[in-house]
Length: 383
Image (cartoon, rainbow, N blue to C red; front, top):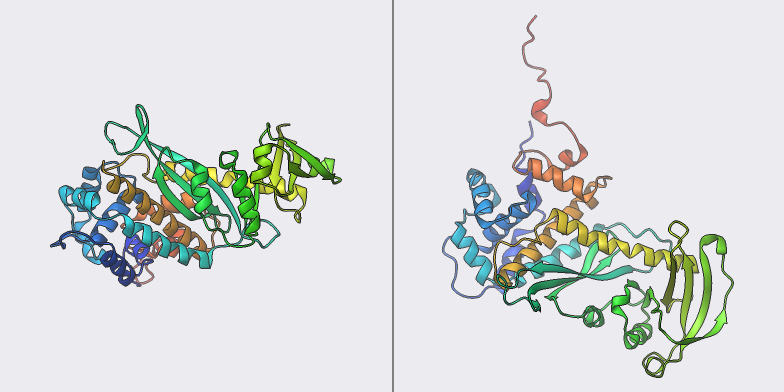
């Protein structure tokens, strides 16, 4: 009979230990560890994410119940004070760097997006994570409210968060958009919150296409009109130039304006893009696909612990967020490797229920019965 380590151990083996220790050395400050380690911190906090634990005490007591299996995980048992101290003082940059390593591995196995064109497709969006200002005084957002903001450039190839930045809650979305380096030839779907005519010009110069919604008060003139298929919900397809004094100075290029009416809701949309090659309906579908970024935020907030925090310092909060994002990539990698149609949530639920079971992780995802549940052909039959 085959021997397997625990499901949790097999999941952690997706992270080469030598790579992790190399990153840990690069991102270490303060005194050296005596019994604890960054790997023990990662194992403990990852277990908390996968099992949905809400406090340091809950996390420590849960993993203490599995203390006899920590040796096989390469981890030491951490006390609540030790875990708190590491979260508070040891740089979260380690897990930001680990996220980059895991992302690179996921990109190699990720499936393509659902469109016919080969250009990389991204959706850019941000989500605010509310914090209590009296408990997190460093997260100043409004007079009586604290927050941090998670900015994500979601690659539609596998729906991977390829560009991720965590900032203070009052940072404007477009300031982050400007510093992201999308690959040449890519297409970026953005919300009206990222409206910046100078940035539109810069993206065009870098040969990066964007799809957004045109502001209702934008002043422009129509240069030419193209025929549209009204049966597909299209109402217009025009080449325009901005005529507003400031807008024309910031964006002195011709852009494409596309009108679209959703046949299901009857709502009318007006899109703005610098892409003149794709069909007008494809442009409308690209903006509709931007909703995947909203679904990504909804998923991680509902299934991982990034809304309630086990530490109050900025470093502890950032550590928890980046570890949660690392767990998301591990789940995504399992999904790509298994080539099954199970959703990310189904995979997470299976892991939660079998985290310390000694089963083959791929057999678990396929739904194969446990080996010990199969009848033993050597067992004596009672006649």
